[in-house]
Amino acid sequence: MPDEPDPDSLSPRRKRLLFRAWHRGTKEADLMIGGFVKRNIAGFTDGELDELEAVLELPDVDLADWLSGRRAIPAHVTTPMLERMALECGGTGAGVPPDLR
Image (cartoon, rainbow, N blue to C red; front, top):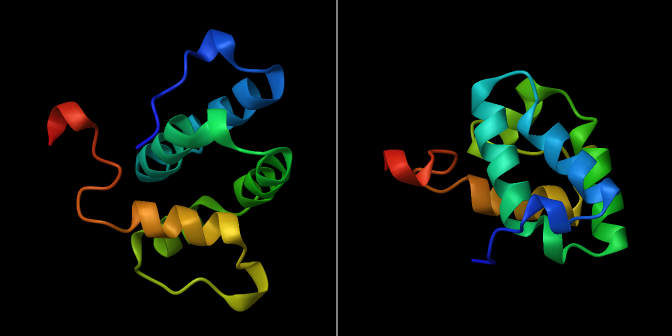
């Protein structure tokens, strides 16, 4: 798993995306999406950042269902970024802070 970045070392775009990922509106989505982004944001390419921005525009309820595996991701919204997020977030204990596991 990549090292978590020092937020002060991130570009303004990456900081903004990290903030958006942690402030989704539901705690479940915050933990899954925010945790995924925090672990990976420093290594994303510009193209992956574009994909992440598109994913963050999707509704919270749908994202939580897709990422947890409760519902399949519809073909019309499937992207490599969303599939990567679903793979990482769909495991047991995903979204649970490490200090609570």
